[in-house]
Length: 342
Image (cartoon, rainbow, N blue to C red; front, side):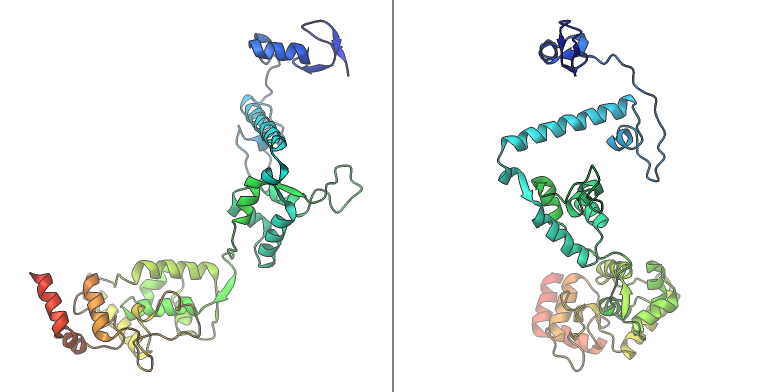
């Protein structure tokens, strides 16, 4: 298409701003006012989508057809950056700038087969859904006769591929998993004095549901969201036994410890972090199990952490206060206490 250039008045192909290629390049080099926008910006259009697109986002320009100054400027910046990336990719070899799409697609399929949706994968990688979908399915793949039909991408930009390949499987909050780890963590917290009522209040659960989970009455599965909440609570409280504010709370702590002793629930120190979720693992330091640490070693460790003598029996399996005092009377431990007191 040829027309008259507004600068040289010659019938040439117009490049931009009503000027031919030669006049446009000269005007751009000189920075003439002719390069300024002469057409006024359009009015701001409201967003009609469920997810509100703010002004200044490219999605507002493309999807909502808003031609205000902010949306136009953001789209112009995006297109300039896009052309710059294309020039860089064209300059470099394809092996250094692009990654085979089959490699990325195989990783995405593996995550999807494990139960992770492609939209969650895009969110975890920090890329847009419109970037992941063409890698998996292409464009109008169900209708090859469509004029805009595109097969799945054969190559992916390296920066996008690195983000997608770095994603690891993360189950959704509603996924059902084995409840062994959550049950053992709750039992360990009860063993050091956390009552089931306080645990249910912190976790936002019904007391009956928490009691069923702790006792394991036919409930072998738990949601990933609940397991994560129990793990976070356990990480905060396994070294922080409850401190009673009055005699009623002290009574609740005592009852919780008695319940744990009656059911032979292991305290936190009886479990290793890499074994507490294993159904075949057994607690250490309890009757019928081979302890990894002796009672004296556990007492020394708890004293170094800062626990008092009266708090240690609930943390060391079924050890009584007399056993703890007997360990304290040990010669090496007595020397350590003497050095600390001095």
